[in-house]
Length: 107
Image (cartoon, rainbow, N blue to C red; front, side):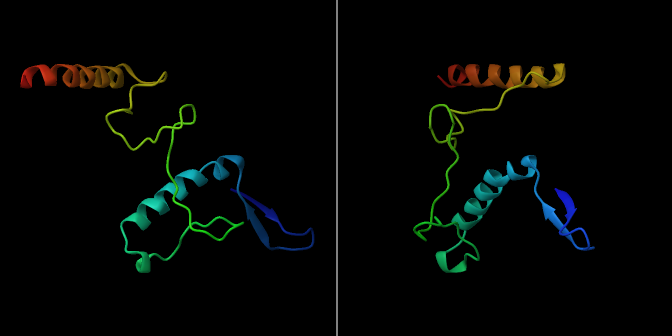
């Protein structure tokens, strides 16, 4: 967030989001939607609406490439990224090994 004076003669500051701050909006929207799903409609203090229609919208998180919803924790999982430490890579490798061998053990 950047603080800048509203006018040259003013001592008041206007706070303006940076691009990084604006990029956080989808996270905030998703958290608010999650919170609203935990409440009865009459208990919600904020709702997200389409400015053109005034209709309430239901945000979902999807994969940008495929459009598939990311709420399926078996279809979409985290794994070590390029900057992961050796310990982090080992933890994810062990987790994958357990997931692959678990169905065989139960058979």
